[in-house]
Amino acid sequence: QVQPVESGGGLVQAGGSLRLSCAASGSIFSMVTTDWYRQAPGKQRELVASITGDSSTNYANSVKGRFTISRDNAKNTVYLQMNSLKPEDTAVYYCNLLYTSSSRNFINVWGQGTQVTVSS
Image (tube, rainbow, N blue to C red; front, top):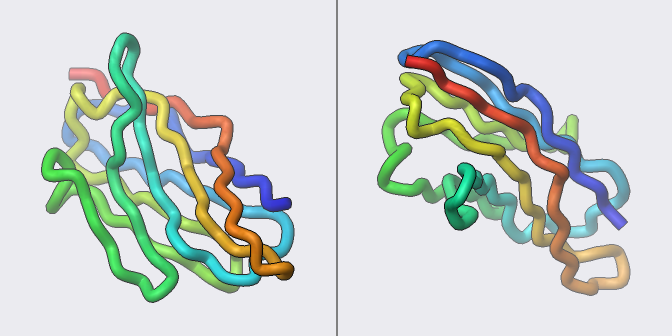
């Protein structure tokens, strides 16, 4: 069973940058998809960016050109580099993993979330 842990959130001024990390513990046979979601108070959880096992990436229109998702296989870590941050990016950011275990079962897990606050 894999447990993802997010880190790197904090308080930053508009126009600034922040890098979030999602570190996965445990054994992964094959990673299918890693997603970054965010949820602001009173709003639905929103898919921000995703990266597949073959390194294909997708982004929400609201963050295209500003956010970059990447993976370091040696560290079992996925990153979300956030540049040109806006106040509307303020939210709790969550990492979600879809992977197959050594027994080839599909498993989906969520991290605990990390707070990102962007001030004007």
